[in-house]
Image (cartoon, rainbow, N blue to C red; front, side, top):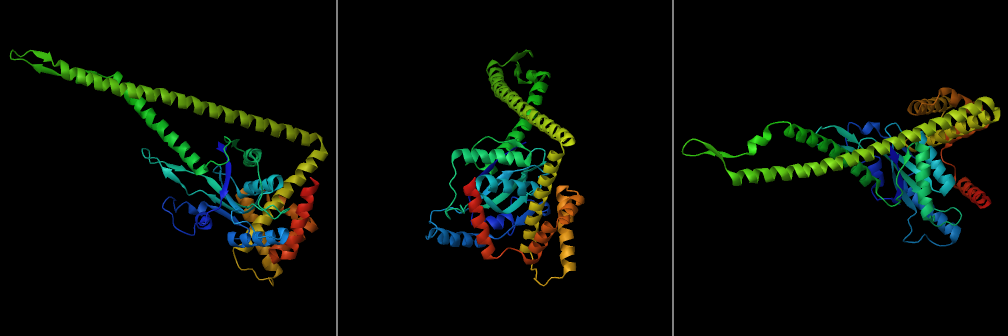
Length: 385
């Protein structure tokens, strides 16, 4: 299955759509509970911070035509997790300085097949991102190859095939076209079967029009019979053309599936090589272990931020409440992303990590002074690259 990512200016009703704050006629309400959300802060709050930082950094207001907040729609699989999308967000920030602060997974959009009445889901995720360059305070400037890199990063992080390059293309339209093609394939299959049945039956005899003369002998009415044959021939020609088109589409589909199989085989071979290397090289094993735990910690931090954003959380919260909430967050994340509980226990064994995570849970977002210091540190790191 192919994926792709394309950022465009965020819409004014983005949060209403992404978090289902309104009722929409193109969604299935019974599937809405399957949606997943993560919010670091609202678009309004982030926009204010961007404007203030721009003025502080450059001494000027943000330009009126600037697009400091953008949104992407990402084609995902049915089992794509928030953890994978958080890792995608981290990669986008590390590689392209794009900072995602909202994620919404939608599993309640799609359409019913008009013939089979089968539900055709449109699995996708919305990523809302801060497009500010922390080095200058202005908006990020990307070139064409950056948009191509976005596609590579997305396919890699989600374990999917890379889509065709086209940074400006609407993913919703692309997904819709794919679904319509699938419908056409089914419809043409049925028509091909009908044509075969017609050729193997005596139906063609029905188009011969005869009439009895005054002696009782039946004679063919030439004009009407020819007209019927011409109509039937036109119908067969149209269906034959569609049949040829169907074969072509099936060949394309088969080629796409073969490519996907090849990608999966390569991925399996890569995993085998990596696993073999870990078995014989203890340093590689340690490095992979650290990387895995850091990825889990990164997603856990995002979960904690979202937890605090979604409810009132007094600073005088007891340690019992903190432990209970942290346990609930970890277990939910473990279940949703198939992460062993042992991995969380390993993270909390680290005193520094333990303190950081509980501090984040108890006090929430860092104060503005720390945020400013963090931005300055990020800018220094980027300059060294």
